[in-house]
Length: 391
Image 1 (cartoon, rainbow, N blue to C red):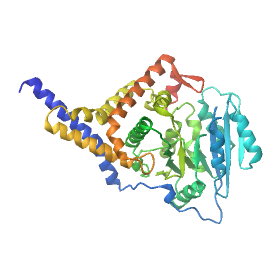
Image 2 (image 1 turned 30 degrees about the vertical axis):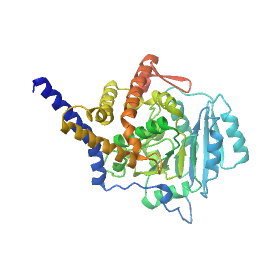
Image 3 (image 1 turned 135 degrees about the vertical axis):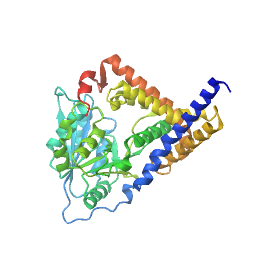
Image 4 (image 1 turned 90 degrees about the vertical axis):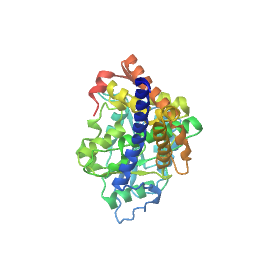
């Protein structure tokens, strides 16, 4: 065996081993913590003599296609004490008019109209900040203008908060996915997000692990105010995740659950929708740091792409390691399905999804540098300001 052949064999074996460990280590960590996946629809609704007041805060910018159905969904919640505060964030379509019409018919809904965006703020972050400032609830529920909830969602989630004395509860929504490419890409993105943020470590007060999601961030007001709230996040594009970060570091007690049908969202439409939608904030999720982006690309290649290559090249040991990695892909797909009943064999397609995500990262970097920032809902936010705003 020549030196080159030996080096190639060693390299492919090490790559296979690394790929297998990328999957095995977090799965073992889950077992070590003893964390069990819980579903909101299996939680008992709150029964109380005095229900805490909840304000649901919904930012909306040009959401005319989705906002009415989302509002009607929220208005059917059977919680005794809740109100909805919708923030129309400079919409140029019929969003504001739709919200005003619904508010004239329903006492639970109040609408705030934002006419201009103050300097130093992202639009959505400012809308959430205004909503929180205008609210009076003991709890604040931050959600999006395309999210639907079952009638018992608040009763169950507030029940969890009260019984477990939590300050922040994240509900990972059921994602309405359609077709192969949409399902595969969203599923893989959810898996790598889970592996990166470690929701099983979020309840541990000694861990720095945190999580947040735009569809459902339920926060105790006292904890929100202690953390500084969205005033700490004026220019952070990952506002939903970073809300979890500032809450955790301020000492909040946090947890994560699956929706189990209680919360759902049609997040993106089609493969093109995924690529275009994530182009805006993928680089931002890496703090606009090219080193982190390159590391992310290499990590995804090792995690998802190499096992499919290494299965057919190199010595037997390397191929076995790649086979173990692929087996764990399927198992991870089973554990992090976008909704109940989804076929975990989609995990076999994760190498393809990995290439798609790598392309999105590169595209996000390219567009951010070319534009000198990000364009979000028609507004250009300069890169220098975005980097200063990273929390």
